[in-house]
Image (cartoon, rainbow, N blue to C red; front, side, top):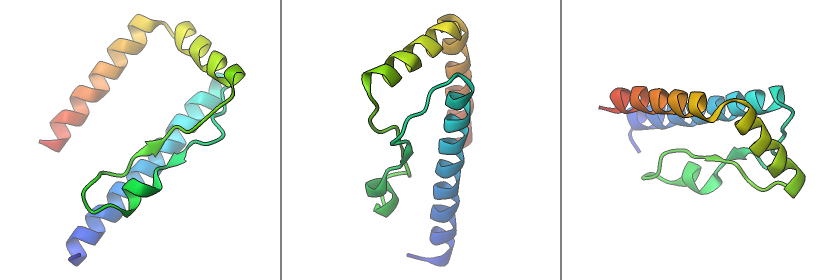
Length: 94
């Protein structure tokens, strides 16, 4: 792998780590902790896949807390925010 590609890959991995931390912080604010939240090791080792955030496993109680937190956040507002973030992300990758 060329040095420029290594730097790009390292930046992508760093970005995925920051996204994981951001998600963990947001979940913590609503009382949800996903114990297996991390970076997907297969995607980190791949030259073709982008680095992925692994949400992992949780017990049924945590799943219900997450569902409640999403509902309390207002599904319509959340959907609008997710669409906006996705739109911005698509624009950056073009």
